[in-house]
Length: 268
Image 1 (cartoon, one colour):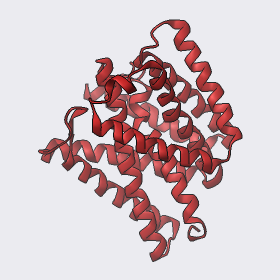
Image 2 (tube, one colour; image 1 turned 90 degrees about the horizontal axis):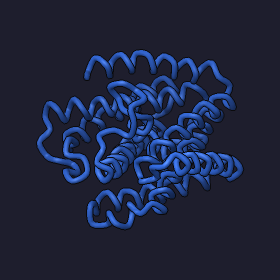
Image 3 (cartoon, rainbow, N blue to C red; image 1 turned 120 degrees about the vertical axis):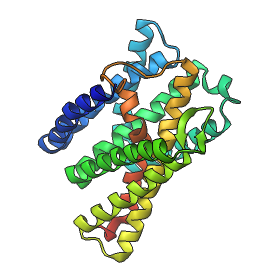
Image 4 (cartoon, helix red, strand yellow; image 1 turned 120 degrees about the horizontal axis):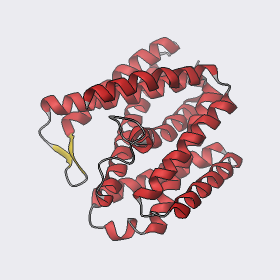
């Protein structure tokens, strides 16, 4: 229900903003790790690890993967994530032809690690290297794009984006999300004091980030459709589970951080 969604958002957003600004980067990373591990708990159920010991084992595997990712070079993790989301896009485009392959529990389990772990490393690095403002900008842009996609799709939606995966999503919603990305880039670039050249690159990065966030959303929808469930969980009333809230971010964050790294000296 709409009132549940609004009430949950009104409670969660201030808490997340507080954590972003109040916590030191190492504690912020631990908080995000806890959220990621709960997402791993949901992913295990979604992909067929139904028994308690299986789900606990998968969460422990995800925790070990988080520790391992922290030991590796950041850019390696980000490039692996970019390659992975390219594969994920191909799976979405071919749905349901490859369903037997990607629904196999071993491959689905590996997919969950590739979805969750690089996103944690990227968001932790974003907070540590670029500060709370950068984290808030990314979160705000993705939230704004999601809302713009929903309202544009509801108002003008005609052409289905991926009807076999997520029938409610439309190309008109994508255009709404792109417009939101450009607005966010204009505001963020102005506040950061970017020059014209950096402004253009930053706008392209924001567009690409929102585009890949849609892939993240569709990828989780594909697994939910396979599992015949509407939501990944019921932790957040009106919103579903953790995966339902972070699906876009898991794909968007690695690309956004990689883009900031390669913009390098163009940033203030």
